[in-house]
Amino acid sequence: MTAQLWCFGESGNSYKVALMLTLTGTPWKSVYVDFFHGEARGEAFRQLNPMGEVPVLRLAGRLFTQSGVMLTHLARVTGQLGGAAPDEADEILRWLFWDSHKFSGQIGTTRFLMNFLSAEKRPQEVIAFQQGRLKAASAVLNDHLVARDWVVGAGPTIADLSLCSYLYYPEPFGFQRETWPHIDRWLDRIQALPGWKHPYDLMPGNPSDRA
Image (tube, rainbow, N blue to C red; front, side, top):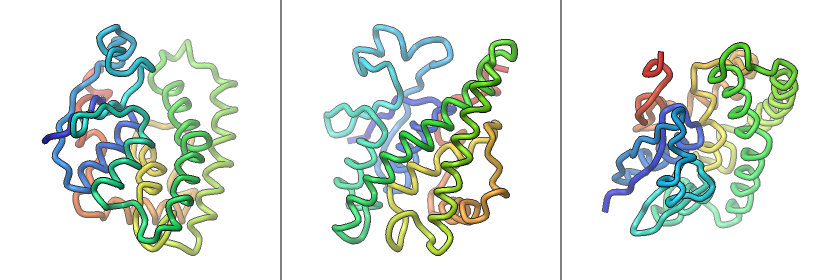
């Protein structure tokens, strides 16, 4: 059965799951959500996800929300990207939680404020504060990758897919790959995985559609 992923191209959280589905060879199709015209907040979409957020995944007759749950479930049912050793599961979960709170959570908000609000509505003090938090989080990840190729264990896992997602987007949000050499090399390794695609090539919708 083909999985369905409710998503849109600009969504880094959707990209995590779209990339996981693609890299694991799981058949799937995208269902475009017109986020910028309020579809995710509409009554029809809230029947799928009362939280009013993408992504939403339908897989084997079940509906899933929250990208970390989707990644964890997909790793379990596909037997891929979940860590080679049983004791790695807790470490993967640790990084998923950290990513949601400290990394992707900061990036998503900052990127939205800097790129998807009109210039006169952009709160510069908030943006500066968020960028400071992102800089601190980037240092944690960069230091972690000094002597290792992957975030957990000897190969790629869903921890890598979760943490990398927003870093491939072209819109500025206060992160430059060249500033963080170990993150930069890690992103190159992920990009070299068979089947990797850029978010705007993997999911429908990008800023040029609204230009």
